[in-house]
Length: 173
Image (cartoon, rainbow, N blue to C red):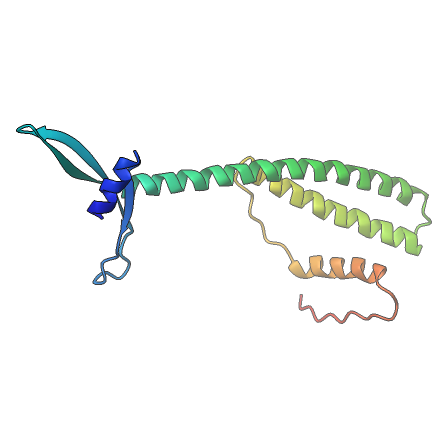
Protein backbone atom coordinates (compact mmCIF):
# COMPACT_ATOMS: atom_id res chain seq x y z
CA UNK A 1 0.00 0.00 0.00
CA UNK A 2 2.90 2.35 0.74
CA UNK A 3 4.35 1.76 -2.73
CA UNK A 4 0.91 2.45 -4.26
CA UNK A 5 0.70 5.65 -2.23
CA UNK A 6 4.06 6.79 -3.56
CA UNK A 7 3.03 6.00 -7.13
CA UNK A 8 -0.32 7.71 -6.69
CA UNK A 9 1.34 10.79 -5.23
CA UNK A 10 3.59 11.02 -8.26
CA UNK A 11 0.40 11.27 -10.30
CA UNK A 12 -0.78 14.06 -7.93
CA UNK A 13 -3.63 12.01 -6.55
CA UNK A 14 -4.03 10.60 -3.03
CA UNK A 15 -4.56 6.89 -2.63
CA UNK A 16 -7.59 5.63 -0.79
CA UNK A 17 -7.73 2.13 0.54
CA UNK A 18 -10.33 0.11 2.38
CA UNK A 19 -9.07 -1.90 5.31
CA UNK A 20 -10.10 -5.55 5.41
CA UNK A 21 -12.80 -6.20 8.02
CA UNK A 22 -11.84 -7.51 11.44
CA UNK A 23 -12.86 -11.21 11.39
CA UNK A 24 -13.29 -11.24 15.17
CA UNK A 25 -16.21 -8.77 14.99
CA UNK A 26 -19.77 -9.73 14.04
CA UNK A 27 -20.52 -6.59 12.02
CA UNK A 28 -17.17 -4.93 11.45
CA UNK A 29 -17.33 -1.29 10.35
CA UNK A 30 -15.92 -0.36 6.97
CA UNK A 31 -12.68 1.58 7.44
CA UNK A 32 -11.25 3.81 4.70
CA UNK A 33 -7.84 5.43 4.76
CA UNK A 34 -6.16 8.04 2.60
CA UNK A 35 -2.44 7.62 2.09
CA UNK A 36 -0.31 10.54 0.99
CA UNK A 37 3.35 11.40 0.90
CA UNK A 38 5.03 14.44 2.31
CA UNK A 39 8.45 15.25 0.85
CA UNK A 40 10.99 17.00 3.04
CA UNK A 41 14.74 17.37 3.25
CA UNK A 42 16.67 15.81 6.11
CA UNK A 43 20.34 16.81 6.31
CA UNK A 44 20.42 17.66 2.62
CA UNK A 45 18.81 14.37 1.63
CA UNK A 46 15.31 14.25 0.19
CA UNK A 47 13.06 12.00 2.21
CA UNK A 48 9.51 10.81 1.51
CA UNK A 49 7.29 10.50 4.55
CA UNK A 50 4.03 8.60 4.02
CA UNK A 51 1.05 9.88 5.99
CA UNK A 52 -2.20 8.11 6.76
CA UNK A 53 -5.54 9.76 7.44
CA UNK A 54 -8.74 7.95 8.44
CA UNK A 55 -11.50 9.17 6.09
CA UNK A 56 -14.15 6.64 7.14
CA UNK A 57 -16.45 9.26 8.63
CA UNK A 58 -16.04 11.61 5.65
CA UNK A 59 -17.01 8.85 3.19
CA UNK A 60 -19.97 7.87 5.36
CA UNK A 61 -21.21 11.48 5.47
CA UNK A 62 -20.71 11.86 1.71
CA UNK A 63 -22.75 8.71 1.12
CA UNK A 64 -25.55 9.96 3.38
CA UNK A 65 -25.53 13.34 1.60
CA UNK A 66 -25.79 11.60 -1.78
CA UNK A 67 -28.74 9.54 -0.50
CA UNK A 68 -30.44 12.68 0.81
CA UNK A 69 -29.88 14.44 -2.53
CA UNK A 70 -31.29 11.40 -4.34
CA UNK A 71 -34.37 11.34 -2.11
CA UNK A 72 -34.86 15.09 -2.62
CA UNK A 73 -34.64 14.67 -6.41
CA UNK A 74 -37.10 11.78 -6.22
CA UNK A 75 -39.51 13.95 -4.21
CA UNK A 76 -39.23 16.73 -6.78
CA UNK A 77 -39.86 14.30 -9.63
CA UNK A 78 -42.81 12.75 -7.79
CA UNK A 79 -44.27 16.21 -7.17
CA UNK A 80 -44.03 17.11 -10.85
CA UNK A 81 -45.65 13.87 -11.94
CA UNK A 82 -48.36 14.24 -9.30
CA UNK A 83 -49.23 17.74 -10.52
CA UNK A 84 -49.50 16.46 -14.10
CA UNK A 85 -51.67 13.55 -12.94
CA UNK A 86 -53.85 15.96 -10.99
CA UNK A 87 -54.47 17.98 -14.16
CA UNK A 88 -55.36 14.82 -16.09
CA UNK A 89 -57.67 13.64 -13.31
CA UNK A 90 -59.44 17.00 -13.27
CA UNK A 91 -60.27 16.58 -16.95
CA UNK A 92 -61.39 12.97 -16.45
CA UNK A 93 -63.60 13.90 -13.50
CA UNK A 94 -65.05 16.93 -15.28
CA UNK A 95 -65.95 15.16 -18.50
CA UNK A 96 -67.19 12.08 -16.68
CA UNK A 97 -69.44 14.22 -14.50
CA UNK A 98 -70.82 15.96 -17.61
CA UNK A 99 -71.48 12.58 -19.22
CA UNK A 100 -73.05 11.26 -16.04
CA UNK A 101 -75.47 14.19 -15.99
CA UNK A 102 -76.79 13.14 -19.43
CA UNK A 103 -76.82 9.38 -18.76
CA UNK A 104 -80.09 7.67 -17.84
CA UNK A 105 -80.03 6.79 -14.15
CA UNK A 106 -79.90 3.03 -13.64
CA UNK A 107 -78.40 2.37 -17.07
CA UNK A 108 -75.14 0.49 -17.64
CA UNK A 109 -73.58 3.73 -18.83
CA UNK A 110 -74.63 5.53 -15.65
CA UNK A 111 -73.19 2.69 -13.55
CA UNK A 112 -69.89 2.68 -15.46
CA UNK A 113 -69.50 6.46 -15.28
CA UNK A 114 -70.15 6.31 -11.53
CA UNK A 115 -67.37 3.72 -11.24
CA UNK A 116 -65.02 5.97 -13.23
CA UNK A 117 -65.76 8.84 -10.85
CA UNK A 118 -65.09 6.63 -7.80
CA UNK A 119 -61.82 5.40 -9.29
CA UNK A 120 -60.84 8.97 -10.18
CA UNK A 121 -61.45 10.05 -6.59
CA UNK A 122 -59.20 7.22 -5.38
CA UNK A 123 -56.54 8.28 -7.87
CA UNK A 124 -56.87 11.88 -6.67
CA UNK A 125 -56.28 10.67 -3.09
CA UNK A 126 -53.14 8.85 -4.25
CA UNK A 127 -51.94 12.01 -6.00
CA UNK A 128 -52.46 13.92 -2.75
CA UNK A 129 -50.33 11.36 -0.94
CA UNK A 130 -47.58 11.71 -3.54
CA UNK A 131 -47.73 15.50 -3.24
CA UNK A 132 -47.50 15.19 0.53
CA UNK A 133 -44.44 12.96 0.13
CA UNK A 134 -42.83 15.36 -2.32
CA UNK A 135 -43.30 18.21 0.15
CA UNK A 136 -42.02 15.94 2.93
CA UNK A 137 -45.05 16.54 5.11
CA UNK A 138 -46.49 13.94 7.43
CA UNK A 139 -49.42 11.83 6.26
CA UNK A 140 -52.55 11.29 8.31
CA UNK A 141 -52.65 7.54 8.87
CA UNK A 142 -56.07 5.96 8.69
CA UNK A 143 -57.52 2.49 8.38
CA UNK A 144 -59.07 1.50 5.08
CA UNK A 145 -61.02 -1.52 3.92
CA UNK A 146 -58.80 -3.02 1.25
CA UNK A 147 -61.57 -5.40 0.24
CA UNK A 148 -63.71 -2.47 -0.97
CA UNK A 149 -60.87 -1.13 -3.09
CA UNK A 150 -60.15 -4.54 -4.59
CA UNK A 151 -63.83 -5.08 -5.40
CA UNK A 152 -64.00 -1.66 -7.05
CA UNK A 153 -60.94 -2.41 -9.16
CA UNK A 154 -62.31 -5.80 -10.16
CA UNK A 155 -65.56 -4.17 -11.29
CA UNK A 156 -63.60 -1.74 -13.49
CA UNK A 157 -61.51 -4.56 -14.93
CA UNK A 158 -64.57 -6.71 -15.65
CA UNK A 159 -66.13 -3.90 -17.68
CA UNK A 160 -63.14 -3.87 -20.02
CA UNK A 161 -62.65 -7.64 -20.41
CA UNK A 162 -64.33 -9.80 -23.04
CA UNK A 163 -67.26 -11.91 -21.86
CA UNK A 164 -65.18 -15.08 -22.39
CA UNK A 165 -62.95 -14.21 -19.43
CA UNK A 166 -64.21 -14.75 -15.90
CA UNK A 167 -62.68 -13.25 -12.80
CA UNK A 168 -63.22 -15.24 -9.63
CA UNK A 169 -62.94 -13.36 -6.37
CA UNK A 170 -62.77 -14.68 -2.84
CA UNK A 171 -62.49 -11.62 -0.63
CA UNK A 172 -63.27 -11.67 3.06
CA UNK A 173 -64.73 -8.44 4.48
